[in-house]
Amino acid sequence: MNDQNNFLMAIILSLAVLLGWQFFVTEPRLAEERARQQAQADATQQADNAPLRADGLAADLAPQAGNAGAQPQVAARVTDGFAEAPRVAIETPQLTGSIALMGARFDDLVLKAYGATAAENAPRQILLQREGQKGHWQAQHGFVAAPDSKVTLPDEKTVWQASGDGRLTPSAPVTLRHVTPEGLVLSQTISVDDNFMFTITQRAQNATGETLTLYPFGQIARTGTPRLTDLFILHEGPIGFFGEEGLNEIDYDDLLSDGPVKQSATGGWLGMTDKYWAAALIPPQEQAFTGRFTGHADGQMGGQSAPVYRSDFLLAGTTLAPGQSLESTSRFFAGAKRVDVIDAYADSGITRFDLLIDWGWFYFLTKPMFNALALFYAFFGNYGIAILLVTVLIKLAFFPLANRSYETMAKMKKLQPRMLQIREVHKDDRQAQQQELMKIYREEKLNPLAGCLPILIQIPVFFSIYKVLFVTIDMRHQPFFGWIQDLSAPDPTSLFNLFGLLPYDVPSFLLIGIWPVLMGLTMYVQMQMNPPPPDPIQARMFQILPIFFTFILAGFPAGLVIYWAWNNFLSLLQQGYIMRRHGVEIELFKNLGLRRKAAQQGDDHDGSTG
Image (cartoon, rainbow, N blue to C red):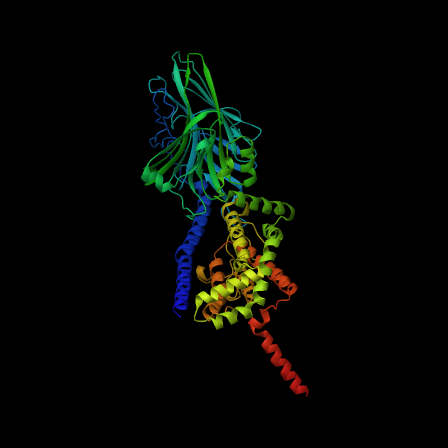
């Protein structure tokens, strides 16, 4: 009895913890995510009328002569003339925006193919933002000089001159040019592809009459801490890959509390990432570079104090005698983390650029899962159908293992009368019970743990699908059928207003949609195919378990719940087939009480006929 009480208490405490997590952690995070999407939509609608304020990106750059580890520093704030300064328009199949000629900065970029919300007429998603807009982030490239160099390099107030018609397209690069008072001729030739990659070729020609040492740099600056998803399965914040050192993911608050992070490598990249978007600097892959992440709490945004975060790189210095020149080419990614696009950039020579998408420690499982879903999506144009078909393939792949497991379960059911007899004979001697049961297992060549294999197999598959649905933009706002218009979001219907038939809204933690209900029902029916446990407390807990999972999974992405319900249905068919083949009675109707009712109705019918 004490063991039963302890078991019951453990189950109750576990349910309390999980339900408490759902109510106090998951639900507030979902509410924050909805608020963040709405805030993004509002910011996009107001973008054209937002006031322009100029925080210069890094003007005060002071490396030590010959020290390739020196890095850009925080610049002073400027506002004079920024709103009126000329711009170079950006227009590609995926992007629209502009480059500010004051400071030669990327600070205005909108993703044409992605809405800020799932609404059909939603404003387009803003990526890089001009000064004065909440959470703006920008990028800049340039040169810094050794401190003993007598040259006035351009700063955040410098207005560069643009060649051509002032329009950057995939077929028309632009060149920005500036000549310092001493005669140093600087230029940036900027090109862009059809997706999200800019190529910046910087040139410096020394016509000053003095020897100069110049260091090429690139940096991304972000003002204000963005609203984060804040789940352990996803990294959002500064990120970089540094050659043999590998991937480095840093939290925003760690930069403020622990100070700068600096790494040197040959081959790699660095930048900042959100859940679906990223901006990344790609130095020349064959050259050594020093990358750095910094955070400062004393920045300004909209007249208020706000932290400023930076990711930057610095290449080794080049000494130019009078008349000599240098050229340095780097790349800048700013866009959506589409898997095919990111993988293509990685294949083109950017070292492990595929890790910009957070596949996690189980990369070997989550990436193939995505590839399988993408393959079926290419044929059917619906990721929901892709999930159903991939689930069937997974069932087929693991059929021999699952078949063996269900065979073991079927044999165990045949042996259940003997096991109950042993427990009755040795009810006061647990050791004797175990010895007799183990003897039966050896005689029949059974593994009592084999019945757990279908569940153990399902756990990594469940996690990989959850990861794919959560981190990949390819799943964002993807519809299934009917009311499921976003597989990456929870089922929007609720059992507690009869799935929308009753004219009132319910609290978010009571949004138990149609698919979670179907999942719970299939799980319940699957459990009823087995004989109930001999322990009444365990039997009751198994009856409660489907209800518990229904509440928990209701807040998960709809695509994941669809997978689970469909997987349960396939398991029902598979288990029923194997049980019939082995001549084992299916306990479903008996457990549901239908057989007894049917027998009673038959007796009544016979009596009335007689």
